Image 1 (cartoon, helix red, strand yellow):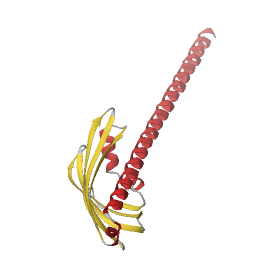
Image 2 (tube, helix red, strand yellow):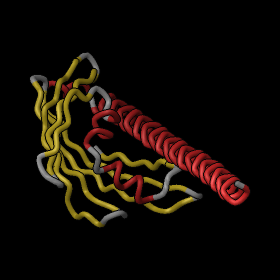
Image 3 (tube, helix red, strand yellow):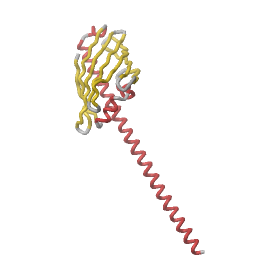
Length: 189
């Protein structure tokens, strides 16, 4: 089975790349993901449960990153097993600067076997496309909202610093006036 697509993400390429390598963001983005652990910078383990045709499949698998060309591209290879079958495949993921953000494109080659292969390639293709759309929709919303939260936090910190500076300046001015008054009182008396 082959599948391809692209998504426009309104963040700079480096931030999208960092998010694609962040286990917490990936766990929240993968439909039905129950666990996603990082074993090394290029190897992960994951467990996800999803409905594929009449089957409710819980897959446990390994994911490896290869041919890493940060922050432009990499290949994700993975394989997983379930009581209803197995799946394996690889995806070439590319990031490009595009329209004030990043265009993420992918090409996936996947193989499935066991009971889930019996539901038919058309249903599997539709399910895979739906899962990809859910993943990239979740991923895009999550990293965009996190970026907005980080921007808001940064603005809040800058506002606090600005307020502290204003208070500090007022305090210095007040001390200056008190000192000036003390000097005047000292010379008058």
